[in-house]
Image 1 (cartoon, rainbow, N blue to C red):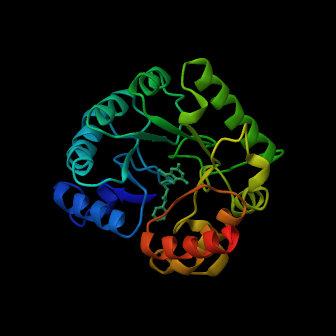
Image 2 (image 1 turned 30 degrees about the vertical axis):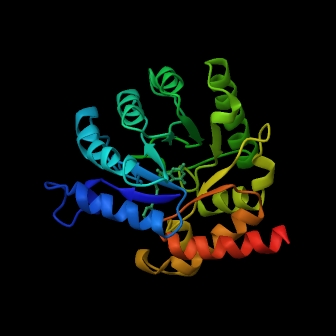
Length: 258
Ligand code: 8Y4
């Protein structure tokens, strides 16, 4: 899964002017590099980020989703927690909802169900603004697994069939490096009912903390973690550097399938 951000921190002018064409070109490039999914997100979920309103989020993502769905065979994924954005994106042709709040916002469960989209349910402790202040668990693997199992159960009870569900432990979302390492070490134990697992490790602070590399120099570390996650059973890898990640995962697949 390739990522295109349409949040102000990704615009050189600080977000006053948003160029949908540039984002669409980026999305098409990621598809050409081998991304099966393009994730389009208009709410920054970085640690410390402020919430964004529904009108602003629609203004950011919809022009990009509308143009991309007609222009690529990659599956378009909308990264949102808002029911209005889920519905609008689905009407424009998005087929996957990536919700870091796992459909816990009011109306989100019903919107996702009626959209017909598949859904990635992600674990997060707290909210983006404060989640990295003091992450704490008794048993991080057990608690993340329990949360994902419960959200999957709620989704199925709401009419979202198992073949529409993907689970994600949410690396970095209310987790210390030690928590992230425990989750990656025990990724297989996070499996619930055979549902596919997605991981996002690309460029995250964990890579920086373990290698000493700043944001722009985390490609090698990100690809190594992607390979380790794939070997541990991850089925979808969310990444910024699609060409390198796809190349690495081709090798993983070749070794495993021979
Ligand atoms: C540089 C750029 C450094 C971006 C860090 C980041 C996940 C996710 C994010 C994830 C799922 C991010 C929306 C964080 N991470 N969705 N979203 N799983 N499902 N940070 O791990 O990429 S945003």
